[in-house]
Length: 284
Image 1 (cartoon, rainbow, N blue to C red):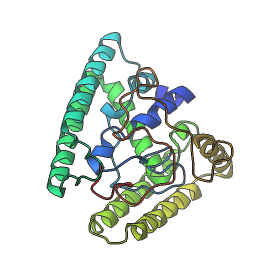
Image 2 (image 1 turned 180 degrees about the vertical axis):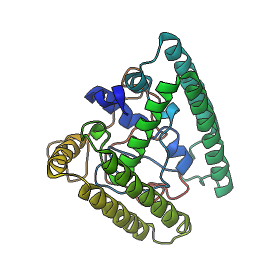
Image 3 (image 1 turned 90 degrees about the horizontal axis):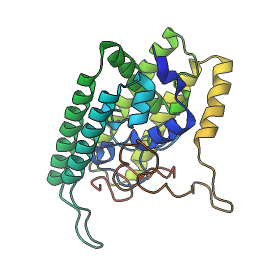
Image 4 (image 1 turned 45 degrees about the vertical axis):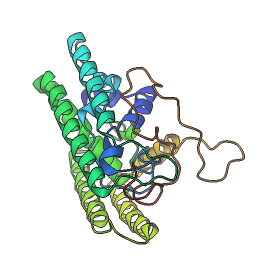
C-alpha cells in the first residue's frame, strides 16, 4: 500500500526529481546530465549508468514526510542524518580536475564509488531504524515503485495515480528488474568500449523495450493518463531553443527540505550523454 505517498504533489515531485540521484551520480561516476523524470535520461530516455537504487537518504525530508508522516522527533533525526551524509559524500568525492588536467585513475574512482555506496547504505539504515513498522512498509513500497518506474521510463508523478492492480504492479516490477539487469550487464561489459555512443544506442534499445512492455500492461485509460503525465514531466524548451535544450537547473538549495543535488548540478533534462556522462566513463 502506498498510503500517503499516493498524494505526492507537484512541488514534492520536483524535489524528488532532484534528489533521487543523490549519491548515484558519484556511485556511477556520472557527470552532469544524469537522471531525470522517469529515468536517468528523462521520460522515454534510456539510463546511462548502472541502474542506481533509490534509497531512504536520497529522498528529501518533505517527500519522506509526505509518504510516511514523520513525527517532529523523526524529522529532526532524519535532517541530521541527511546533513551528515551530505558532508561525508562530498568528502569522499575526488576533486574535479582543473581544465587540461588528468582525471583520477580508475582505482581512485572505484574506491570513491565503494565508499559512497557504503555511506548511503549506512545513512539509509539509520533512517529506516527511526521508523515504525507501518512507516517502513510504506517507505519500502514507495522506493520500489519509484525504482521500477525509473527503469521503465515512467515519471514519478505516476506513483499512486495510475491505480495499478496488484498483477500490473508485479508485471511492471518484473519488466523493470530485467531492464536494470540488462543495462548493468551491458555497461559492465563495455567499460573499455571504444565507441560509447554505440553502447548508448544499445542502452536505448533496452530502455525502449522495457517501456513498451510496461505500457502494454496498462489499460487504455491508464495509457492515456501516463502519456499526459509524461508530457507534464518534460520541462518546456526555451523559446527558439533547438530540440533537446532545456531551461537551466534551479540554484543549489532550491526547494525547502530538499536533499542535496547530485554532483555536477541538478539534472537539466537534456538528452543523455554517452555512458559516464560528457566527461567519459570515469568522470564524476
